[in-house]
Length: 359
Image 1 (tube, one colour):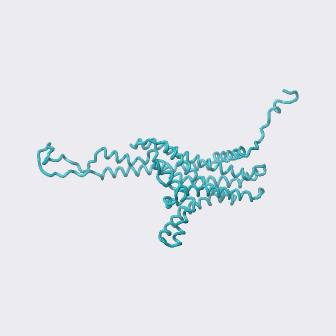
Image 2 (cartoon, helix red, strand yellow):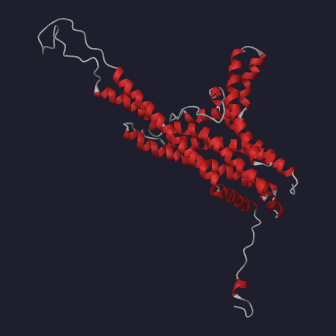
Image 3 (spheres, rainbow, N blue to C red):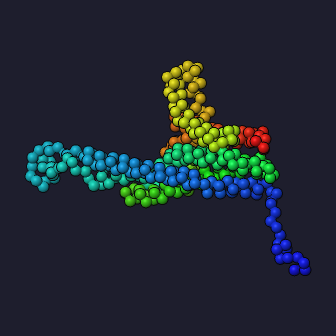
């Protein structure tokens, strides 16, 4: 050690990296850390899990009741006695064995019950998980995104970051990347929970787990990615509105308002278009849902879910997309959904770029 230089001064001081990607990743990690440590995140996760358990319970009770009704009402017809004869004979004129019209062969009862509970078995249970996550997950992630982005304006953290040399592009990229990771994590977590339930509940009730081919595993991967894209796209609406309004309320209320619009307004538009069929105005109304996010994601889901595993065709989207899932092809659904993501992120950057850092 050089004389006159202390040990502390000989240790190199960590320097901030000038690499754009590494700095952006640190911003992403910071946003994820804030999301993980917020009490709201834990409450929303508890709501997501707590809401899924009653859904499973309702489905279980519904299929149990259906199995009971099927077992007690369906019975094979008794053979008609043609002629009298000696008991024990099997030829013409023999007496038929005693028949109970309320009896059902045990094999038939077991087969009927197994078919009823197959929906609670992996991979069919992913139909329930995907539909639930595609609806409730959209709502909860919009709330979380609006709160995360809006609070940065309330506490002034964005102003502090920009004043210390962080570019607006890096700031927005960190937010967008954090929302994408949150969407992937939420959907992946719910699919894992649903799969564990499908591997336990269904077989316990008599369901059988089919062999999953290699392309079936790829289909499940695509299923996860598409539902994650759904949650991510709707969370970008909250990002844009929170950036424009510079508040939590604008992000949450605006994004949830769009979700409600798709749920309520688009089915009404479809009904009016059906009533005004073969008119120019009806044609315009019929094509109107094709330009919204929900129907296009439903069209994309319908393409992913059908083969080789039946994962429910078009699962529920955040809006009223199920009405047009059979019309919008998966290619168009993917293109429009990605265009929505690019447009929402671009508008958010434009709003952030035009804003004075001191405001």
